[in-house]
Length: 215
Image 1 (cartoon, rainbow, N blue to C red):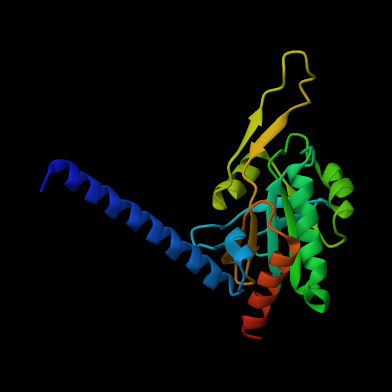
Image 2 (cartoon, rainbow, N blue to C red):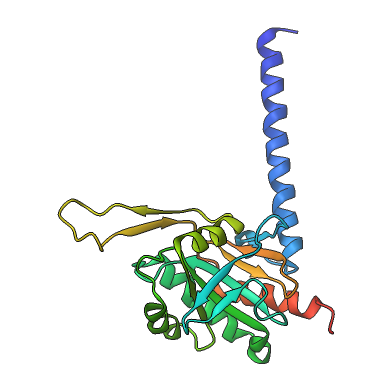
């Protein structure tokens, strides 16, 4: 067999394998979500390696750990209050998704974790989170505490240095922008990609809540 043809066959096999693995991943994500529909391309299955222990401070000054609200599902987002667009959009979507659950809304706790502890003080969070949902809790802490929480959820974040002519307090934060659905027993069961519709979030949460065993 000519060498050029052999190379072409190998390349074709690799392409098919990649496409097949992608199709399998997509189907797994849909099945894990427990909800039919093409829009579930925005929903990824969770992982036991995502999430873990943390100790932070809420907007009232109280200490909060991963064991808070043991009977409730948690919808968690990492961001910062000075974020100009992405964070407010995601938090608004989370709030809308929780409200879409109707009577089941009290079974989900929306949680906002700051990646900017330098500016996101307890008082700042107390002003910020109620604007999105009355039941939303905002969490901050020391740099070490925030770093530990972000590492547990494999969240990327980085401070962007301000321009030379800007105030040192005016800076942005680069960060990943996923929403995590955590089960009452602490497992990350679904991950929502950025810009996931509130309806999709609500549908996935409702399916998870309905499928969970009652105590």
